[in-house]
Amino acid sequence: MRQRTPQAAVHLVFPGVTEARLFPYLSLPMLVAYLRRHGVTALQSDLNIALTHRLLDPAVLGERLRLGGLDEFDEALLSFAVERQELLHRTVVRKQSTSLPFEVGFRLVNNVLDIMLRGSVLTRQATSLSEVFRLAESQAPAGDLAAHEHDELTLGLLPDDPPRVLGVSVAYFSQLVPAFRMARLVKQRAPGTIVVLGGQQLMMRGAELAAMPETFGHVDALVTTQGEAVLHRLAEAVEAGRPIHEVPGLVTARGSSPAPEHHIADNPPPEFDGLPFSSYLSPEPQLPLISCVGCYWGRCTFCSYGNRSRGRYQQLTQEQLADHVEHALRRTGARFVAFVDENCNLRLVLGAAELVRARGHTFTWSTRNRLEPLLADRAFVRRMHDAGCRLMSVGYETNSQRLLDLVDKGVRADLYQRIVEVLDESGIVLRLSVMGGLPGETAEEARASREFLVRNSARLGIDAAQMMIAEPTSLLAAEPGHRTGLTLADGDELQSNSGFSYLAGRHGRVIDYEGPTREERADWLRETVRVVLPGKNDEKHPRWKKADGAKPADELVLHPWVVPVRGRLIDLRWRMRYGIGPGHVTLRASGASRRLTARTELGRRLLGLLKEADVGDHS
Image (cartoon, rainbow, N blue to C red; front, side):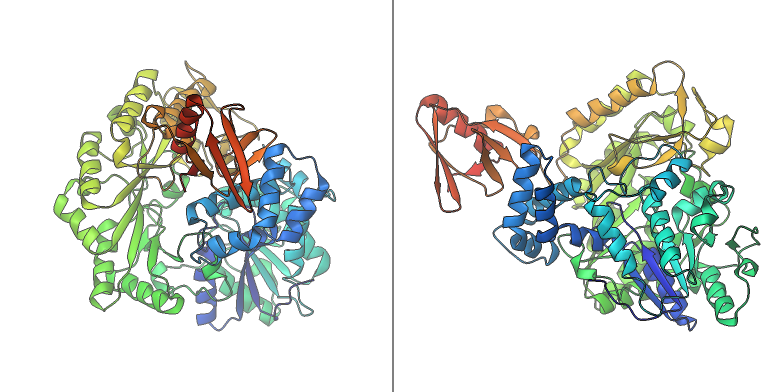
C-alpha cells in the first residue's frame, strides 16, 4: 500500500543505499529548517532507513526465503530473522531491553540486510559514471526485492498533489544509482515535479555529470554548492512561474550562474520532524550536528572535502553552536550528540559543550578530528571528558612523518604515542581510520605503522581501513605535484575501496604505483586488519580470542543465535562455523534452548574452546 504524504513546495529525500543507518544524515534536517524559516513548505524523508525497516519486515524476509538460492548460512539467518523478528525489532529499532544484547541484534540485523541487498540493482558496483546510468535505467528482476521496495517508497513520496520540487541529497557514491533510478521514476509518474540532485557527491562530481547528456534525461537540475540559498531561490521561482534555468546556483541543461552567498551562521538549528529519529540503528538515539562547513586545515592532498573548502571555511561561534545543541536536545530528547564535522575545531566544540552544560543540560558527545598536538595536553583532554566527550574518531592514516608530510596532513607523528595514552587515561575512546596506498609508501613504513597499532591495540579502536582514492576535487586528483611515486590513469574507469568499505566506499581515478602494485599495497593493509585486534571496538570478533585461555567445560548452553545445521554449529552473528565433535559432545534441545554436554575429556576441551569463542555459556 502506498504511503501518502501531504503536498509540499519542496520534499527533500535521502535515498538508499548506505551504511548511514545509525542516525539521520544531517543534510535534510539543515535544509528543511532553513527553508521553513524562509516561509517554504518543506518535508523530508529518509528512504535509506525506510528501506532498512522494509527489508526487516517478516513478509519480505519470508518472500526472500521462498525465492531460494541461499546457502546454508543465509537460509539459517533469514529463518531466524523471521522467527525472531519481533525480538530483533524491539532490541535494535525500538531500543528496548530484551534477552538479546543490542550489539548482537545490531550485527544480526546488518547480516540480514547484507543478504537482502545482495545482487540488487541498487547495490551493484558501478566502475564508471556511464555505468551508473546503465544500472539506474535497468529493469529490476522480480526477485530484486530491495529495488522494488525502494520503488514503492519512492511512489509513496507522490501523493495526489505531488511536491513542486523533489530534492535528492546524494552523500555517498553508492546512492547515485538509487538516486537516478528514483528521479527517473518520479519524472515518469509526476512529470510536473522538478527533480533536483545535490549533496556531497554532486559537489565532487557535478561538473562531470553536467557534461553527460544522460544526466538531464533523468533530472531537471543539479546543486553543486551549499543547497540552502539555492533551494530557497528555486522554490521562489517555481511559485512565481519563472524558468528554473534562471535560478542562481542551479545547474541545468542550459548551464548555470554563480550561487548566492551563504554562511552556516545563517542556518537555524536543524529540524528532525518527519524522520524516524528514535528508530535508527544506534544503541540510543544520536543527535548529529555540525559546527562548521569545510575544514580549517583543508590541505590533506587526498581529501576532496577539505581541499574544495580552502578559502571558504565557515564555522559557528561557540554561542551559536550551543544554541543549536540546546534546541536540538529539547526537540528530540536525545542525550548523545555526534559532532559530524569532517574535522572538528576542538576548542570551539568544547566551549559550546561547556556552555550547554552550564545551562543545565547533561549530555555526552563525540567528535571527528585529526590527531592535533592539542590532544597531547592532558589538562585540555580532561576538560573535554568533564564536558561530556566520550568518543573521538580520527584519521590516523600512518605514523610515518615522511608520509604525513607528503600528503600535507599537518600533524606530528612523534606526539601520537602520548596522545593515545592521554585519551585512554582520560576515558575518551579513540577510534582510528587507517589508510593504505599512500604516495611513496614503502613496505617498511607500512610495517612500522602496523606495529604502532599492534603495540597500542588495547588503547584504541579501528573505525575503518581503506586504500587512498583519488576523488574529484582533491589535490591528488587535480595537481600532479602531489603524486609522489604514482600516476593517475586517464579515462572514465573508477577505482574504489571494494573489499574494504561498504559497497566499495569511495570512488576516484585509477592510481598506478611505481614499485609494488596497488594490490600488493592492499595486502599490506589487509595484514594490518588481520593482526591489529582493537580493544576499544564495541564488539570483539571470536578470532581475537586466545585459544590458550580456554578452560575445559562439562556443559554449554548455546546462544539463541548459534544454531545447529547438518552436524555443525553456525554462529549467525559472526558467520562462523564450528564442528561439534561427534562422539565427544552431545547436543540436546529443550524448547528453544540447546545444550552441549561433554562425553569425553576431548569434548570438555572442545566446549572450553567454544565458550571462549562466545558460542554459548555455562547456564
